[in-house]
Length: 316
Image (cartoon, rainbow, N blue to C red; front, side, top):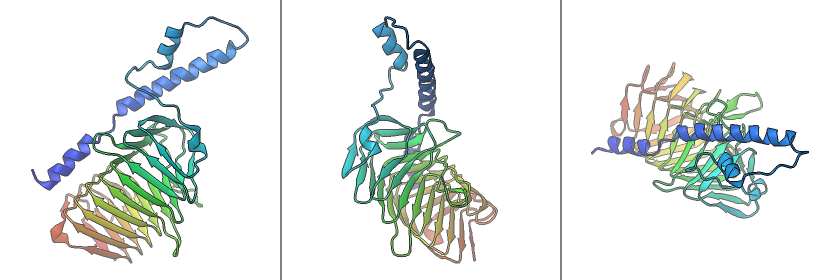
């Protein structure tokens, strides 16, 4: 089996069970109706059937919820979260000097347009078969993203990001569908990514999956970027940042309505090593990669480009 097939199989193993998300939606709708009924009957005292109550609160027996801990609302020091399904309805803030660690099997379902703001350290420490998942309860409304500000640092290993919709900038354009790095010349956030999957994320402007605004991104091995979209940089957009893409990564079916179907580089530095696959990405200019006044270091003979439209690489 060649490396391309290995990457493809790995991506299939990480497919998100969207039927599970739909079942969670239905469960919470039932719970909301029940709470409304309770409020109307608050003045009356009625005898409850414990077995019936349990059935109504957890109608899907194979879904086990863990109450979202209050510590997530006020993170101090280094806080570690254990395996479980957590429903998030508030913005999580990781202050400078603090850290949030998501252990193998943690699944975040954002039920509002919120996300994670990190000024300290964020780690998604999944493993094969127990990936860390960040996704939206409502696939259409989505969730914000992982926002790395200033000197923040993030490490992703066996993580899955889906249905991120980006975060509004000062012009009210949403950018960085799943991850947004925002730094300054002397203070840049960093993210290191291994064995992870970014799928079905969207940004109104830059970076369907990742937007690095003066940030450092290292994409190591066995990562998949698929079906992400934006105006500039369907999967990744880079402005005055540094991006390293090492080996055995796949960019497939990403799209940009303007430039850079998979990657858009604007005055930044991008280094692409070997055995990376760019397939079926599309845009108006630079089906796979659009490089504008930046540095693109790539050996085309050591990477694979297939069926990108209208071209593979456009440079200026």
